[in-house]
Length: 60
Image 1 (cartoon, one colour):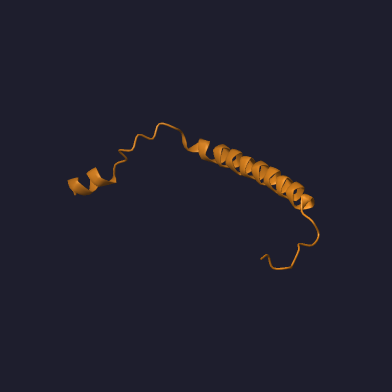
Image 2 (tube, rainbow, N blue to C red):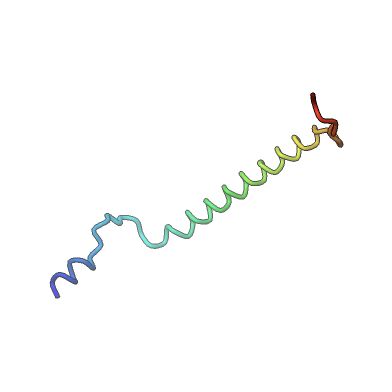
């Protein structure tokens, strides 16, 4: 039994309280959303610069 108790103890150094995971996760989700917004905006600008049609003749 002593071995099970030793294995069950947390030796990973948790010093933060349990109420911190929610706000950190929200911050991460918001940052990912902002990054996705700017990525889509940038890709739309690049796509607008492309010609409507490309030359289909094979190069020699």
